[in-house]
Image (cartoon, rainbow, N blue to C red; front, side, top):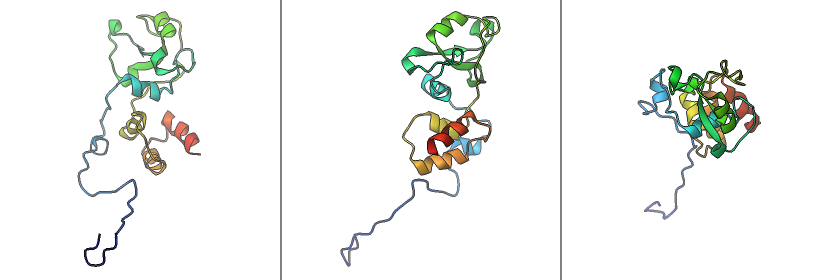
Length: 151
């Protein structure tokens, strides 16, 4: 409120605000940034599809499958895990897909910081999504998926 005139001043600000200096965004400063791995973001990365049978499931019916199992030296990292339905995960057991004679339908990948923001599942406005999409690698499987949603 202007103390002299009594008029209210409104300032419209875009939902994306550019700043100069340090933002605290690890994706801008560290090229080796690896987002934390959790089931919800993993399932979103894999579009709620079982990466073995290709069927879509609600998250409660999916599990995290380690492509190379712990028992064979596998690690709990983005490039070694996929979403799998319980039936396929049990069928694969503590074997690699090759040993279980199962085939992955997609190659697992580590999301970038911008992709992780999307995968976290928080509400993202359309103009924010355009900004995030501009920071996705063109080779990202998420790039085409989001283009279809925006289109």
